[in-house]
Length: 76
Image (cartoon, rainbow, N blue to C red):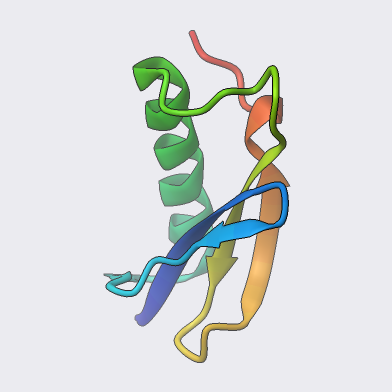
């Protein structure tokens, strides 16, 4: 178990997750990040036409352990 943080990057701007969530491990953190990306896409919360967005998963020390572009996530 560990606390993971899910930052959203828009171009050079970082929207930092200061709360985080406790999850069993990196696999669960990855799954959470994908669901978070899908939510942002479904809600229209991001403007993919004008900006590049990334989700950055950070560990309890706020070090990035995985990141991926939100536009690579498919909304179904």
